[in-house]
Length: 211
Ligand SMILES: O=C(O)[C@@H](O)C(=O)COP(=O)(O)O
Ligand SMILES: [Zn+2]
Image 1 (cartoon, rainbow, N blue to C red):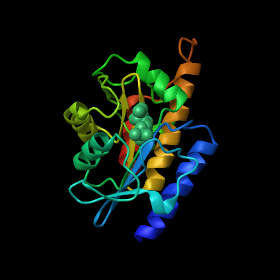
Image 2: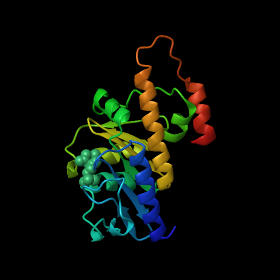
Image 3: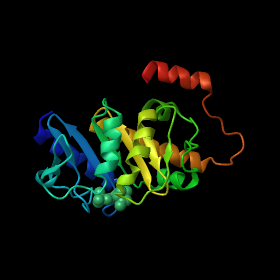
């Protein structure tokens, strides 16, 4: 995909997330890997109103080259994309239910979202680590995020929100949407008697077939 096409697609998918309530105000940020660097949402930008030509362009060394000032979460995106060479994009949101789970999960543990549906397993996988709390934009989070991202496609930032990678931006967006729905189901069904999750053999079969 050309850089122009990547810019247009980033703005369109970000608007789609915003329009459906996955992001409010200026929350969230997105990064896409390019052949010669990275495209990133500018800091304090609204995902619903991005201008393709004003997206931040960073070089292969993550130095800001052009466009508006990049998101303060450059370290977050760098950690994930360095840890997952196969990933082409990262989406960070403050979507309500996944963020609620990030406030319930003990820091450093995996989030307790049970494998209720096949699509959650297919899109997110077996693990969803929860990285301890860091101030947004704090470079100190990079090693912890890197370690979590090596183990899983998606992770939670404690008391902050989800971070989801994908082979393409569309994949990352779809996975972030699926994570939000899974978090919503998990909270809806919390404590409800008789809830049935997929068993280990069913999860293994999904990962073997689609993972
Ligand atoms: O929560 C935060 O402050 C950031 O993680 C965020 O979501 C928005 O920050 P910018 O991308 O710098 O606007
Ligand atoms: Zn954030």
